[in-house]
Length: 320
Image (cartoon, rainbow, N blue to C red; front, top):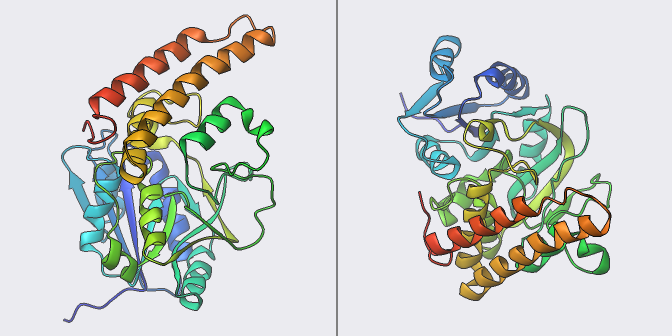
């Protein structure tokens, strides 16, 4: 029997999110009606019984089992190698599609051939908007966002601009990887994720390559995806207070990104400005009369940043 090409290949990477899988698949099944959908799930060495559940509940689905956790980017690359769809959707296991999500986003891609990557409107379970239409990070705009000093620099473009209603289609720099729709020809040209990123920044880096190759990255608001966020990360390490990220991995990926895309001096500037931010934030709290300014925790963060800077050789190589 000849191999047929699906409309869309949905790539899923699971890591200890068994409690979400049934709900995620129910939403995916509803959104897949009338479409030819290929689903490939890779389990990244979960310890919560995910594999047994998947084999029992979804025996027809293509399942890849990794003996160790290789990270989000590498796992998606493994799935991509087995996929056959004209379009590729990276979907998190903590992201739940609306019934019209696939039909509407695929229709947009068909009508707009220069769109290389499409993201949807992301909301939490409470319906509140999440950052969905994002701009490239720089050492400066990250410093402004971390310190709150962006109020003094009105013209600075931050990674997240939440001051508009997110109700219209808009080109942007990158969209979050929890719902990340791209086309086969884009991946044939630029590949998928740089395997040096274990977690975080892989989609930022990929969108940069997509735009450099001449395609657009677009935010599409006409369907919503409910995204919880941080579920896999909970099992890997302590989530940071800022952005619910695993601190060590976030620091490393940030340094790798700046070194790859902006060079040695950008990495050094990022480390210096991050250090300055970690001193400014507790100082501002003290000025406001807060007894617990958190200075010790920020000093610890400074130490982690500089150690990672050294271990990655100025952001040149990953540590795992």
